[in-house]
Each structure stands twice: as C-alpha cells, then as structure tokens.
Image: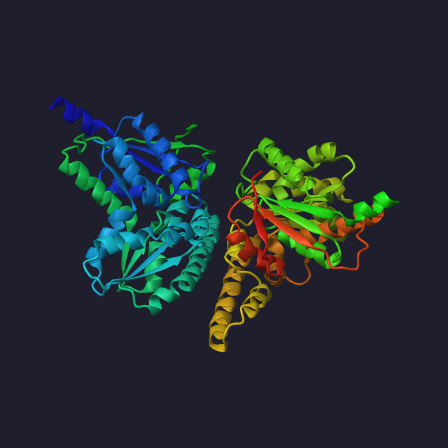
Length: 302
Length: 302
C-alpha cells in the first residue's frame, strides 16, 4: 500500500522533439491538475521527421532514460515521428512503466466519431509520408470501406512558431504583455492580419479535403491545437476535429486511474522543463502553446 | 601561359547549407554561361544559422575541401551564415584561390545605390540576429548618418520551399509539367492564391520598413530572389532592391576577369550538383529557384 502511494506522487514524463508536445502538457494539466510533470524537448535534434527510423528510436530511448532518472511513473511520447516508431521498442524496455504515444489515441477516437467513414488527416510532410495515421486508423476502423485522405501542411508549423495562430491564442499572450492602449491597438490589428493570413493558408491546404466531403479531421501534429478555431472555420462546423493532444490526455487519465496511480494530492502539480538547445525560442513559443508563462527551463545534454 | 589556360578551364566551386545558393548559381550561369560549376548543398546539416561560429567554420572548411578535390579555381560561399564567419579563415587556407561570400557584394552595392542613406535589410532570423549586413554596410558607407533597419522574415523560406513564390517563378515550373488545359487552369488559380498569400505575408513584415521611408532594401537571404516581384510591389517602385545573388555573380566576373581566369571556351559550361542528404527536395525546390530542371544530383558524405 505504501508503495502505491509513492508511485502516485511520481511525475508524468513527457518528451517531444521540440515545442509541439506542450499542447499535450496543456491538456494533461487541464484534466489532471494535481499531477507533477517533467517535460523534455529535444530542441537540439529537432525535427525528428526527416531522420531515419533507427535514429528516431535511438533518440527516443535516450530521452526516456533521462525521464526515468527524474522519477516518473509513466512516459508520454508527445511527438508524432517518435510515436510512429518508438512505442514498441520502449514498451519492451519499460515493462512496468506504461508508455503511450499521440497517434493511437487520435486514430482510435476518429474511428469512433466518424459516421460516413470519410476521414481527413493533416500533419507535417514527414508524418503524412510515414502513413502512421492511415495504418492505425485502418487497424481500428469498424468499416472496411473507410476512406482516408491525408494532406501535408508544411506551412502550419512555421506560422504557429512565428506566433500567427488563432486570434484567441495571440490575444492572451499580448494581454499578458500589459501593453499601453495605443500599442495594444497596433498589436490587435496585427493579430487580425495574422489570423487572416493563417486562414488563407488553411483554405489553400484544406480545399482538397472539403471536396472529398470528410466528416472528421485528425489534427496529426502537436502544434495544430493552436490553430483549431481557424481550421474549424475553414472546414465548416459539421466536420468533427480530432485533437490528438486532448485524446492523449484522456488516455493518460484512463491508464493512471486503472492502475490506481492518480496523484491524490490537493496541491497543484509542479512542472519541470528541460531542453537540449538554447531555451529562448522554447520559452517564447512554448508560452503561446501552453497559454502560460514558461520560466524555468534547464538546458541539458543527453 | 599553358598554366593559365588550364586554370581557365577549371570550375567555379559554390557551396551553401542547402538549396538557396542556387539563386547565385542562376546569376553566375546568366552572366558567365561558359563557366563550369560544381555546387555543394550541405542539406544534411542545414540550417547553419542556428549553429555556433566554430561549427559553421568547421563545416565551411569541410565543404571547401570537397570542392578543392573537384578541380575548382574559385570558391563562392553562397550562404549567409557561412559568409558571416568563414571568409577570413578560408582566405588564410586557400591563399591563391580567391574566395567570396554573399554579404560583402550586397552590402557594398547598397552603399553605392542609396541616396537618402536610409537602408532596409531583410533576412532569416539568424542572419538578422548576427548583424552581419549592418556591420558590413557601416564599414562601406560613405555617410556617417546612415540608418539601417533590419527585419527578420522567418516565413519567407518555408513559403518559397513550398513553391509559393512570385507568380512568374511558379508559372514557368507548371508550364514545364505540360499539364492538360483543365489541370493548368486549376493550377493557375492556385498560383494566383499562393502569390496573394505571399503578398499578405510580405506586407506584414515590410510595413515597419515602409514607415521608415527606406530608399533601398537588401535581400539578405539567397532564397529571396524568388519573391523579388512581390517584394517590389509591396515596398513600392521607388525602393531599389539589392539582390545579393546578382551582386555576387558580378563580383565573380570581376575577380576572374582581373586574374585573366575567365573560361574562353565556346561551349556552354557544365554543372555538377552534390548534396549531403536525400536529393528529392533539392531537385524539386532547386528546379524552381534555378528555373531549370535539376537531374543529376549525387549524394555524398563529408
């Protein structure tokens, strides 16, 4: 019994190749506010998507080893490329410590939610090329006639990392800057322009999916929750958006509950951030994605 | 005398961290169609901009060594980050073989062309942060009151690498695809949309420079010649655009002429392409930038 209590107090370990995984952190914090979190962003070696399977597995093992040294009770692979290749090798090594990725939760949910079995998937070029979502959706689909249309949207990540996201994400950030009224009006006009440009780009990428009459759309990149409103506007209200970050958080809750490992503390959980390269960009863009100021980021070597 | 003739037949060696340097190749081919060229794109280690000075110098030396093994009479560093740090170390090693970068030619030309001494510079975040153009312009400026306004435009490179460039660049490419009329009309609409989006992004970045009343604008990134028309539309016709690629080509001509090393062959020059990572993207985006099909690309290790 004592042992279980100690496990409960342990942290959830989360890694990503960079910043995107923070949208998963955001959802876990919302759903499980008492859990402690250790986040590792492997910013020195980002992006993983263009690297070989062997290299991605090697990096994932190194990241996991680091997290294990920080007293974690679970590993969340909050990176699409690492989720494609590393879950099975990690399971073999971790044994008693559960590990989940971001692809299975999203793929499973879309199979439950779709009614017409015409599904859209968007992600980075590397994720779409890997066919990971397609394969996983085919594994869980109840219909043999399921149709999956995938579109790579390589401009979304640079747009988000430039801060050109959903207006509401930008607004919260600028409000925090406590700008003078005149500055704020200037910024506000820019926010409107940024969202408008994002909308044009999204319309360009998603026009093919609209023609195919998809009824659900998987956001296959951890950055995309920051542009969910614009994506919904572009595809129309009838299309169900599947947010992998949200689905992954739900899965974390399920697993911890089943094992009776949920943190029973009344205090808010703590969070530690580690990165492998200069933390400046991580702090800035991370604060946007997390909608929370990121202060203490430690640079480490793996 | 025999020796000089042999030198004349040698190639011009050009390297970049990736694809962008091909705009320099394009200008050299226009100006010096009889010269042979050996191009090396270090695509496995791109981008250089986020790496340390020491690492960039190390990579530049490795690239130069590779080119020297391919019988070159001159080295062109067609990469902004490498030009910032590597020219002096390379000069020390190369001795008799001339070496030039892309920063000095652009910076010198803008000092000659500006009348009001209010100069704008645009580039990637890394180039702008390095202050390389600012320092070099201050070195060559005839006026002590020169004002230099720099703006980082991190979305331009992803846009260009997605093919969302000046309409004329996109058109030539799609014409080559020999599409059917109906396909071509579909593509043409997309081309118009892409250019429109590019224009919105450019307006957003350049609004600050317009407010400062610049009379000349340095395109401080080798990718930017592919969006020159849109940039000119946005800043207005009165602003002189300084195209570093073009200025670098002129400098190559001057140096070879002065040394009497110009290739006196009547044949068109040959070109060899080498890259350090998968050549697919290099071939596609390179063909856009060069406005010429790139076929034989060899993958090498350094």
